[in-house]
Amino acid sequence: MSWTTQQALEYWQKKGLLTAKKAQELRSALSDDTHMSEHGMPRAVSIFATIGAILVGLGILLFIGSHWTNMTPLLRILVLLGGYCTVALSALATEKRGWGRTSEALWLLTDIVFGANIMLLAQIFHYSLTYWQGPFLWMIGTLAMGYARQERVHAYLAVPLGILALGWIDSGPGWFMGGQMEFLGSSNNILPVLSLLGMALIFSSILTKTTARWDFLSEAMQRYGMILAIIPVLISTIDISIPQEMFSMGGTLKQYIIIVCTYGLSALVFWKGMVVRSELKAYTLTALVLFGILLLQRGGQSIVGYTLDTNPLLYFLYVLVVFAFSLWGVWLGMLIQSAKMFNIGIFATAVIIVIQYFSWTFILLDKSLAFILGGILLIVMTIFIEKKRRSVLSSFDS
Amino acid sequence: MNKSLKLALALQVVIMISVFIPPLLTKATGTEVYLETERVDPRALVRGDYVALSYPITNKVPLEIARKAFDEGKMVYVTVSLDRPAKYISASLEKPKITEGQACLSAKADQAISWDNTVRVTFPQIAQFFVPEGTGKDIEQDLSNMVATAVTTKSCNAVLLSLDYL
Image (tube, rainbow over all chains, first blue to last red; front, side, top):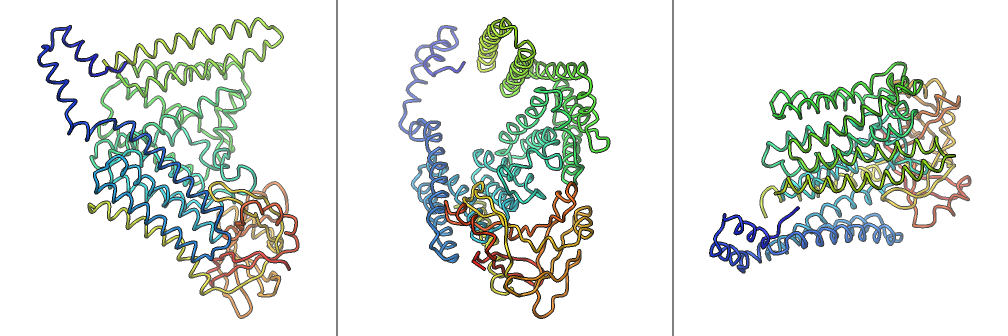
C-alpha cells in the first residue's frame, strides 16, 4: 500500500511521532511554488510525454515509409536526417526552457527516430530482412543517449534491441510469415539458451548497479532478465514434448558464446561478492544448475528433454521441480523484501497452476464436474493469491 | 549541452551515415549485373512491403560446394557474366579474381540442403526488394518475367538497384 502525504502525516501524529505544528510546517513546505514547479505531477507528465514520444515515433516511421515512393534515394536520406535534427533540436530547446520531463521524452523520441532512420536507410538500399546490424547500431546509439541523459527509459529500449540483434545474427534470410522471428523458434538460434540469456542480463544488472554512470541500465536488465529466465521454463511445463523441442541445441557458436558469457558473468558476480545473502546465492546457483542441466546434449538432442518425453512420471516430477522453484522465488521475494522477485514468483506459480489445470481437464474432458470444480478452484486461488500479494507488498512499502 | 550528450548525438549521426555510405560507394564504383528472378512473399517487420527474391542462377552452384560452405559456415562466391540476364560462370569458397565481362556475388548456403538434395543458395545482400505499400502482390504475378539489376564490387558485395521486365 502506498501512503499519501496527508495519510502519513496523520498517522505519525496519531503515533505521537510528529507534533501538529511540525506536520503543518511539512504540509506548507510541499505546497511551496518552487517545489511544485520542480516536482509537481512528475510521474503523470513523464508517462504522457513518453507515450506521446513513442506515438510520434511510430507515426513518423509509418508516414515516411508509406509516402516516399517518388523520392530519390538522396532526397530520402535528407528527409530522414532532417527529421532527426528537428527532433534533437526540439529536445535541446525544451531542455533550455527548463521543461525537464518534456525534454526527456523528446530525447527518447530522438532515439526512436534514430532507430527508424537506420531501418529506413536499410530499406532504401534493400538490406537483408534480418539485418542484425540495424538493431545492434540502434542499441549502441540508444545506450550512448541513456548514458548521456542518465535516464532508465533508454535502457528499456536498448535491451530488447540487443536481444533482437543477437537473434538476427546468422539467422535465416527472414522470408515468409514470421521469418524475422525465427530466432525465437529455432534450435540453432537463441531459443534453447533464452533462460541463460536472462540470467546473463540479471548478472549484468548486478554489475552495472555498482557503477554510478551505468546504473540507468540496471533496472531494465533485471526486469527483462527475470522474464527471459522464467518464461521458457514455464512454457516447457505445457506439454511433455516441449522440453525436448525447446532445449535441443544445434550447437552453434552463438549458443556457446551465450553459455560461456553467462557462467563467466555469474563467476565474476560471485567472486566479487556482489550477491551477499546466502539464500539469494543458493537460489541463483540452483537456477544456473537447472538451466545448465536442461542444455546437456547428446546427438543434437537435449538429454533431459528426451528423457522427459519418454517418461511421463519424470515429466510430472519436472513440473513439480519448476513449481517448487517458483514457490521458492515467492518465499525469497518476501525474505529479501523484493517486490519484483515476489511478483515474478507469484506470476510463475499462478501460470503453472493454470497450465496444469488445463492439462488435467483435457484428460478428464468427459467429466464436466472437473471443469466446474477446477473453475471454482482457480477463482478461489486467484482471489487468495491477489489478497496475499497485496498484503505482502503493502508490508514492504510501510 | 554537456560533453556526453554531444558525444551521444555525434555517435548517432555517425552511425546513420555509416549505414548509407557503403551502399552508395558500391553503387558509385560497382559493376551492373542483371539476374533473373523467381519467388515472392510480401511484408517485413518494421520496414513495410517487400518482394522476396530468389535467383534461378543459384541452382547452378554445385552441391558439394554448397554443402561444404554450409558445414564450414563459409560464404560461396558466385561468378556471373554481365549479360542480360546474367549467365553462371563458376562458384568457389574463395573470392574469385574477376576478369573483363564478369562480376561476382556473395552467396550463403542455407539449411535446406540437409533435407532436400537440391542446392539451396541465396544472395543475402540482394534477397529482397522493398516496394511501395500494397504493390508486393502485383509484382508477385510477374516475377518469373523479371530481372533484378544489382551493382557488385570486386569484393563481391552487391546492392539492388531495380526490378524490371526482361
